[in-house]
Length: 335
Image 1 (cartoon, rainbow, N blue to C red):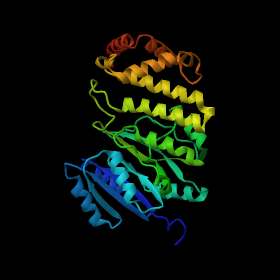
Image 2 (cartoon, rainbow, N blue to C red; image 1 turned 45 degrees about the horizontal axis):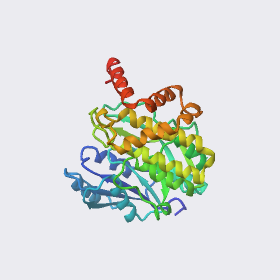
Image 3 (cartoon, rainbow, N blue to C red; image 1 turned 180 degrees about the horizontal axis):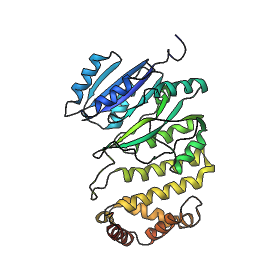
Image 4 (cartoon, rainbow, N blue to C red; image 1 turned 30 degrees about the vertical axis):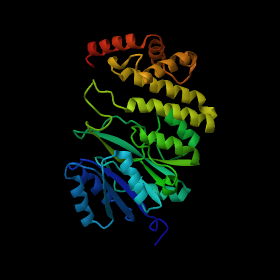
């Protein structure tokens, strides 16, 4: 047995009411050209037949282990999977997504060759009709090795991929770190906490991870009146990343401020008008941040002119600007 074959990879799949998509997901993991896997299916209190289907898969493939728990969200399910994992490396696949057959073989080969704690593949996104969507993260032309200051910078400029589903991560990194439970944007939060502990990340160009973009998940909704919690969590995470940058990457201060402003812009462009009140303390704090960073809005080199325009207006009169913005969206047929 060679060195690669001796390494066990634990692949963790949170499962919640995905009976329609789970077979494709699990089958894509079972077909991996790298065979030394354990596949951990964590049934997060499913109310459909997903839990029973997971047990059926376990009967068909001895590499599959199934755990059932009360519903607690994706982070809770992943954390249980981490607790149960026996592999030296850990991967994650969302239960409605699927992966290319050579994904883990490619990732592990680079991890071992370069002695890396984390390696990342590229991804694409497929809609409900099977159409490939525009790339969210542009794949590199060939394999690259990013030091973690560079990786952090790419995240702050919204060019990096924070998803743990595209990554193979050394299990040792999870000894003292877990996904934050009860939050969205949880991958970003965990990744920014881990990056200062990682010398470098390998980036592969192959789009081996396939995101199935379906409506009905936490952050994908057709209801324009809903205000998903993700928009508050991205602001909280922007505050956290400013702290990390100050401690570990002070040369990235301007990028971190740009990120914080951009996340607050996203928040203010999505919050329902009815929540833009002085009685909403989170909204008030977002507005105060903009007012206290007028100089950065004007001078930060990483903001676009459109960013600056909206941020200046929102800092001055947020509710009025939102009403005008909503009217413009209606007139353009986007409301």
